[in-house]
Image (cartoon, rainbow, N blue to C red; front, side, top):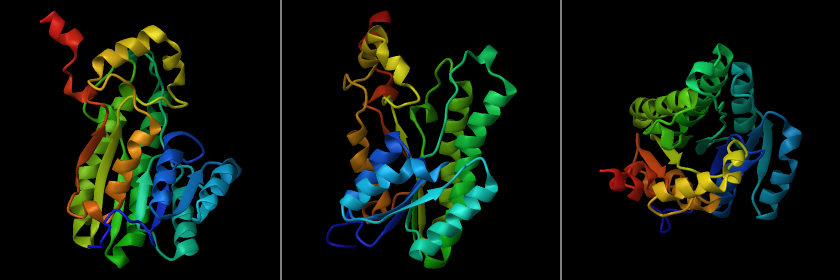
Length: 263
């Protein structure tokens, strides 16, 4: 093992869904640790500013178009990434979406959108990149889940199903690809403010309720994921695979004052 097992110098990382949000924060963390990047979004032009930012850190950033609901797009992304660098060491499988509705209002198309993006897309992106990792006998695949990998919430039926599936998929792929030197883990953020859920944080009463349920008494901040994503991407985690790492301030413990008071 290197003297600094968290050093990603010389590594190449793909981070999907980097036009905004947590994908960009995780990309920055990997770049600061020394990795060069492949960054993806459905429209390449939406990546220009982030590409410049990564390059200002002294790292390369190759922008590639990717629609995870399109198998052909996934194959083209994998080929373009491999051609750009000659290898891929790390995949952060971040691209995802959500539809918030009461379960009785979820449509057939709502279900397909969320499951096709979050679960089917995660699998086929991982598959495409694993094929490039296997000949090198090395890889770090980080599937992005959420606290809904282990907990259910009203109004999030398709999303919870997709994230629970990502957790199970992670364990299966870890078993499948471990003999090839590839680790597969799930990084599961708790309640972080993103473009998808920003409207919730406009409600001060809801934020207070949320914070009461979190042992650390605050929602996640994007930098709270930095250490976890670098750890799972690095050789510091070389004997960890098939695991789900919750970065949730403790909300998954379920041990809140409000709940205790009701007993």
